[in-house]
Image (cartoon, rainbow, N blue to C red):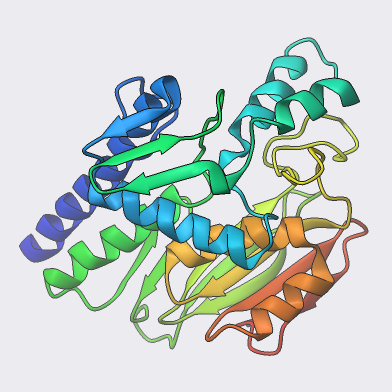
Length: 276
């Protein structure tokens, strides 16, 4: 019991560490400082790691996933306060401040080479927190645990079961649409219902940086992957890519599987997705 308590404290410390680096809501976080000044000296290696992984995913998805989408989110959030949506001209103007290629990472400095840029790590930070928490628990010799840091990371299995059973939220009802059995993999879900900007779910927080609009085909994507960071980032990326390209991408990656829920509520999965 003492080992478990120590492991939990250390895991929570790791989650706090990620928050302190990557929160948009803490004015003194490293990410907030970078966004405010457009430059950050002596960045923490964990921040550099997350940005590099994110940029790799941007390249892989040809820009469908892009952590520099924050100015677009700010525009929609501002309009949401008065119940309106941005004009096309406003979207086009803001899109000129977006582009993952304009993040520069050099020894001991990160900077933007385009004015007015801002980064959000909301699509990867929770995953990294779950992975760090897993490492903290395993270092204490804990072999069976389920970590929920916004994304799920599963170690071992619960007593008398072969996997951790986790329900996938129905995007339109207060119920589950599927159930997964996690063992040695992590799970993340991105859905149009989390923060919506229009009552019909057409406009929401998942934005395609290439168009400035929310993709129209899916209402949710769940990803099972070896790490929570991968699952977290890929659920956002594949939502934006749409079902056809996303399925192709998932099938090309080791131990990555996807569950797609269409706008009409139809569920489809890749072959290895762990349904129970």
